[in-house]
Length: 427
Image 1 (tube, one colour):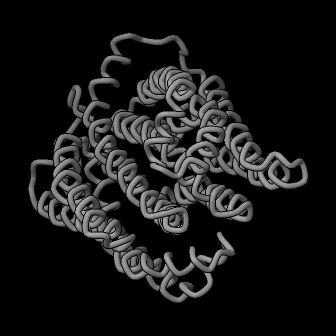
Image 2 (cartoon, rainbow, N blue to C red):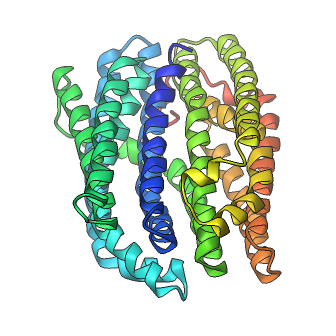
């Protein structure tokens, strides 16, 4: 819990800011809300790359920290930061070229939404380098079980942006542009704070090609796994957009709340990455298994807690984000699915952390791809063809989560994930 609670603050800060941003922009009308839904979904590519950087770095740094080599753990953070900065800059430049075609493809025939989303995305893209630097920083700090500074850095960045967003959108009259600028400010500030942490830690800052190559090799499975998530959620937004502006607005509210609870419960997964990685690095397989069982229990309890909270809050929560009655009605179509999936998600996210910490990335990759291609994507597109509305999208998410739950519980019973020491290329 000493690791999970600060991780919860760090993880919750960004989605809470996104929820604030959604509430601020929602007052501009359904088109603006739908535009942020489309543009934000595209920017989730940067968040996906950040998750890869953070999770891969945590596992590698934790193994080395558990084996008693803090210097090597810091070196993992330096190389992850170089990769993050380069990938973020590349993504920002690419989105200046591709923002128009991507948003038009996602928003379908709703050209006002596509135009507004393109405007938002071109500005927000410049926050990608800072976002990825912050993700790498969180990764190595979690690996060496540093809990306080990440909380301070993330809170400072997001509080500044949460104050800046409504000021830019309303009193200064920038509208959607103000929302995008506030995103860039928060992400750049956060990245710079984590870079300063590496400098003050005394780690050599030069890039080391062999370690960079190792990070790329190890990150391959996380990248492929993340690509399956991205294709799934981009497709879900595209389907929602084709139902109409009201529907995509309701989907934006529900999916951002889903991401919030997912990242909040990922606090347990991050504790699992750090502790399981350190236990296996120190040669303690029994301790790693005990941690895994505890994390499953904690994840289930957290999921039930969120389910109760959102069930009770169903009559009022959608109104926090949009005054439109049509958006509220469509949100209620989603709500039973959203509530029922919370306990499943708690267990799934906890076990994800266990196996990432153990370096069992290939299995996670294959399971995620199987759930996406065999469940999520076929169900949501079949639902679109059958005109099932938003319920079809969330039925697809339910199938995806259940496939992962069964696969992860089965893997937990196997001894194959408890590899001891610091095996090359494994963590």
